[in-house]
Each structure stands twice: as structure tokens, then as C-alpha cells.
Amino acid sequence: MSGDPARFLNAFAQALAAMALYRDGHPARERALDVAHQQIQDLQSDTARPLFTFLGDEVVFGRLPLRELKSWDWGKRLAQAGIQRLEFEDAVSREDFEGFLEEVLARLTLSAISTEARQMRRSSIRFGAVGLKGESELAPEPLPTATISFSLGEEVDTVRWLQREVQTTGAVPLVEAEAVVRSLAIAMHGGRQVMLPLLQLKEFDQYTTTHSLNVAVLSMALAEFLGLSATDVRTFGIAGLLHDIGKTKIPLEVLTKPGKLTAEERALMNEHPAAGARMLLEVEEDLDLAVVVAYEHHIMINGGGYPVLRYARDCHQASKLVHVCDVYDALRTRRPYREAWSFEKTLGYLEERGGLEFDPELCGTFVRMMKQWEGQVALLPDVSAFITTATPPPPGAKRERTGV
Ligand SMILES: [Fe+2]
Ligand SMILES: [Fe+2]
Image 1 (cartoon, rainbow, N blue to C red):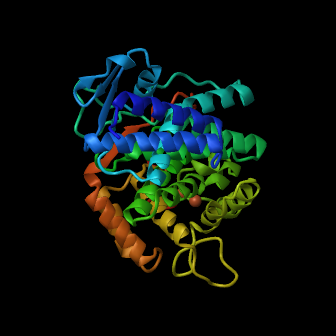
Image 2 (tube, helix red, strand yellow):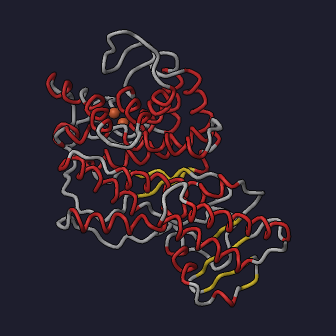
Image 3 (cartoon, rainbow, N blue to C red):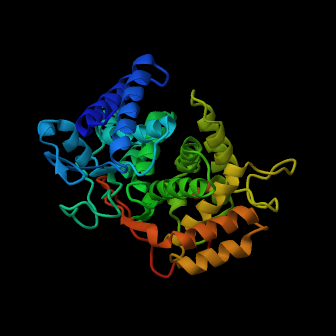
């Protein structure tokens, strides 16, 4: 059967709507997905690489504006969510198609979810309209690469809200965490090549937020580089995002203290893996991997680090993976007690510590990935809308502390 671009887009929108309404496995959701998947296959039988561009009111298929979709509001919604371009390069399996739609949906609904949730539960928190601002404006012509322009502002705000929610209620809002990870996945896959959107810390007291997002991105990148499935990649993303959730229990003065910690402060700091694991255990959903990673991400391969295990044993692969990403991001970030390390110095440190602190194979793979994808790292300033009151640390409070 021959394909039709407008028919596909309508089926695509219906599938997104059904996915927003029905849970996994619901017949209405499955049917809508089947129809849309069939439509893309039909379209690909005529056009090898169907390409859609969403420019405000206009929907363009290849170079052809689709006039019948002039009043189709999904084009505008997709463009506003940073999805200005949709291209299907190869045959898409049903599973990949569903995963991709879930990511699109997360991107579309992220701000709605977080806004609603914030208004409902914490109306005192200020937030503003943070658009998806790119470093450069999108050209009217479809760009060959970097097709999503984004700032991760919504994601940062959501994670910040999530951490406060954990602090005040003790509960971990998983729906929002999952939406953030899906949204990061689509930010990473907007172009032809994978992109690593990494946030640059602006205020010291925002470290845990930007760090959690960066560790999620790096963990997903490494999982993908290792060839894991899209579902596993996202599971690693959740584990990366929540690895330091136990830090929400530590006072900010300790977290942002320049210089050496006292013995008590150090003990408090070292509690965060166990505290995080306990919090994640309380979430009803199955978060096994995130629990293990929260608990194990500071344990070194030679048995050093913390918490100290009563009986030495090997840590989970995911914990070792997040550990490498964790240390990379910590060293690359300016902290109250030291400057940010350079790309080369950080990779050198990781290589040196392979086999001692890090799993040598994973650490070697991470270094290879970063060298290969260095050009695909997008450094984004933290432009989130939350008001912060951080004060910079006194000058001269510098000491080479690698602590993460
Ligand atoms: Fe940690
Ligand atoms: Fe960390």
C-alpha cells in the first residue's frame, strides 16, 4: 500500500494522544501504535527517508508544504517542544517506534507535568516560562545536524522541584523523573549524531541538580555506546539521575563547604548512598537498579570508597558505569574548593585510576567514547527559572579535593 505523509502524521498524533491516555499494553494504545507504525512503513515504501519539518504553522514533507495540515495544531506543539524536524532514516521496528514516540511525548508533556504538579503541590515555588532556547536560532531551511535547539531549562526546573519534593515529603516523584530522562533521550537524539547536552554550573548550591542531569546524560551515552537497548539506556538514565538523591538529606552548608570537611560532616556526606537507596526502596515502582546504583556508586573496585561492605563483593555493572560518569562530571565542574579540571586532565585521571577505583574496561570505554564524541558535547548554561540565593565561596578557599 502506498503511503501518505498527512495520513501518517495524523496517525502519529493519534498514537501520541492514545499513549498519553492509556498505559502500556492497553488495546487502544497498541492499536493506535500499530496504525501509525504501519503508516510509516507504507510511507517508507515510496520515500526512503521521509523527512518532516515543523515550522510554526507550516508542516513540510521533504521540500513540499502539506497544505492540508495548515490547521493541524500538532506541528506547532512539536516545534515549540523543540522538535522541528522528524526524519526516518531506516526501517523502524515497532519497539523503536514506540520508544521514540514515548520520548516525543515526554518532550511535549514535560512542562505540562511539572507545571501542573508544581502548582498543585507547591504553589509557592516560583517558576517562569522557560522556552527551548538554542544557542543559535533555527534556520528556516532544515539543518543537517543538531535539529533540536534546547536549553534543558524545563528539565533543570523539574529536577530541582523533584529534589525539593523529596526533601519535604520524603517521596520520590517517579513520573517526573521518567519524563526528564525521556526528554534527555530526545535531546540527545535530535540530530543525526548523538549529542551530549551537558549543563554548566552557575551557582554552587545548584550542583546536585546540574550534576544529576549530567550524570544521567553521560550514563545514557555510555550505555548506548556499549550497545544496550533503548529501554536499558533509559533505566541507566533513571539510575544516573537519582544516584545522589540521598544528598537531599545533607544540609546545603555542608554540600557547598569550601575546604576540608570535619569528621562529622564527612560521616554525614558518606551517608548519602545508603540514605538514597532507602528512599528509592520506598517508591512503589520497580526501581531495583536505581536502588543498587544509589548504594554502590562510591564503592571503588579495590574495595575503597564508601559505604564499606561487610563482605567484599563485586558491584553491579550499572554502579560501576555511573561511578565513572559521576567522577567525570564532578571533576569537570568548578567546586567551592577547586577549579574545574580540563577535559584532558580528567580523562587522564580516569585512565590512571582504572583498575584501582574504576572498572578498567568501563573506564577505558568511557574515555574512548568521550574522545570520539568530544565534538558532540553541547555545553549549556544553566538557564532555569528558579531563583537562587547562592553566594560564591571566599577566594583562596582552594584546595585540590576531588570529592564527588
Ligand atoms: Fe554520590
Ligand atoms: Fe554524584
